[in-house]
Length: 119
Image (cartoon, rainbow, N blue to C red; front, side):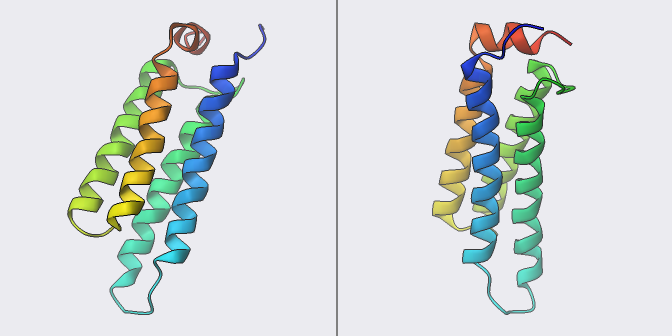
């Protein structure tokens, strides 16, 4: 197998940063109200999606570039919906959406598509 391009490593790093940022948002925006469980579960959902995307950028990743793009678009759609419905803080939604857009930008490079199409 050829060496991993640096853009692929950047995509993996962005996925990890997005997951960690979502978990940080979960801790920062925690309140001890009864209805806060839904908000926390949604932050964890987004963290799981980011970690799944990060895993797709590894040598043993099972997804091609189309699937990674779909998952990133699904993630950004969920972030936008949760932000509009006021489950997420606006600034947290903007930061998480920006990370997802950067992941989509990494996937759209021709060298990234070529490496991710090895499956």
